[in-house]
Image (tube, rainbow, N blue to C red; front, side, top):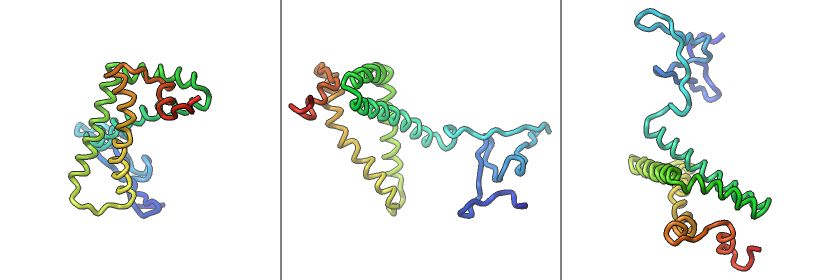
Length: 184
């Protein structure tokens, strides 16, 4: 039996579990004795912290805003995938999706998530003390900076055209715009 208060993994690193009152190093709750005593002498059991509550406020904001943007992109791409079923299926799901994302609350939440996520990512990039960057992180930074340039024409032709000029940007419009004369 391992007498150390931690269990080493494949790479020889200690395994930690984060609790509400700090981190404890252990291999299992039984071995580690996660029951502690508070100043009054009563025994208490610490509950593991939820994954969304870990990290700094900045990390949690970036995670929350990223999850909101991911949910939007996922529903948007699922809407495109319904084109394999039929144009009517795409249009039906688009009505539901747009009812959420183009509502006042949906627009504010989506806009704030975009601003927060981009702002925090650029802030993190600006605070770097060295530009020795692993290839995977360099790829992530490059793609993250490239996305707005690829999205700008799409946003201008859909959301801005709808808001500013009253264009009915249903999928028929988008397919005709992308493939004129070949959409049907």
